[in-house]
Image (cartoon, rainbow over all chains, first blue to last red; front, side):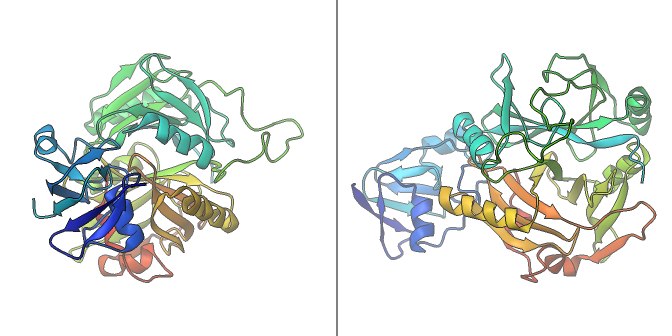
Length: 93
Length: 307
């Protein structure tokens, strides 16, 4: 399994494997500080922006919370994306 | 009490983001059975202890939430309730039998002040897969997953819940065993029932219309709540609050999210509600203890996250 380094809001980095979402890893490792809710792409609480790096949207994000325009500029729900490279993420999108 | 006029919440149509993954949850983990599918791809489900055709319909969509809720009413009162609903100020539209929900007879649909679509119906086919009625065993097929017995209630978020409460009382013939008031006396939340359950539905005042907080399913007892918690751990379902107990309704409970982000409650117990009992009243500042009696305080996610 490939792991990537994730930095959220310039805080301490943590590792996330490609088969897990960033939010799931943040919960398991008690890493990062972004609030979360349903972890299913529905509630919109874990919204953030991928500032650098490659990622994949692995499950559907609610259109009530992520518009097509937001999706185009890498604003995502962190419970729905997995890393494909090291990532830098900002919660102040 | 005699159950009259409005019998129960009989069906909810839910929007889901991932049909296959979410359906697997409702079937294999919550314990519902798939009844049928519609031509437009919706999936109809029922709980093992329900006699009617189905009670939950899943529809693939771009955002989770509730499409509408349906109430089963006395067969002699459907027309009367439709007329009273129109007189109350909610224009009704007739939905012909078997045109939307398979097995369901004629219904009336309308939107109430909170932005939610309600439907009323009286005729629905019985399922071929219901509980036994001749020398009945407690169950027909071995219990599965969390073993949800039946659809129990739902909590809706929207504006002007005082009017919604008035509608449920005056037209549905329901009553409120329990309410929560703001310091100025206005309603923050109301629990409403048409039978001896503490609630068939509930409302919380919220500026955005048409939102749902959770869908409640009945489990048998506190042991079943523990079993449900095991399933949440095993299958990585995101838990919100519990296992715990409400002071409001006195039910025992866990809140968690299904894979599309709709909040589910598995619930058991609760007091017996009678329409002649005095109203139980909570002050808004005490609602944390009222909702989560063991913790004595609110979980912020609980009041803030809706779909």
